[in-house]
Image (cartoon, rainbow, N blue to C red; front, side, top):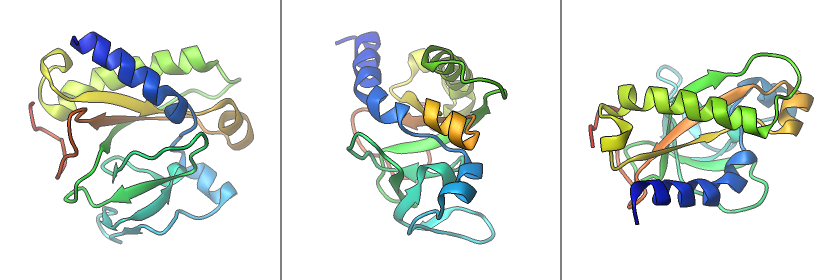
Length: 169
């Protein structure tokens, strides 16, 4: 199977879950807590794994895949532990009416692709790593002012340990 087919299948498989996720911390103030994970007070890195509200994810957070049609929390872990995904970039959509899923996906594709090489250290076409994104839904956009797209990087063949920043693979 070629890279384009793998990405297409991965994108389709993840689309349902990804469409339900977002990362806007403003929403946390409205919908409540951040979960059971622990962050270092100085560095803000996850130091103890646990569930974390999708609205409190930050760049550099590592988390594992989860199943379910509606996901409000993700199982985060310190990046030194085995994990599936790492948040590597955030893009804020402009205020206004919900632009539609296609417009949000287009903005996510454009921004996540553009930032991939700078984070991983190698062009996307040459990398074994993939990216995906967490996006606002109609409900989170309209009800909570959620405008945040979060780009995530992952290795489709295995969990990783440590950050994927600068791995150039």
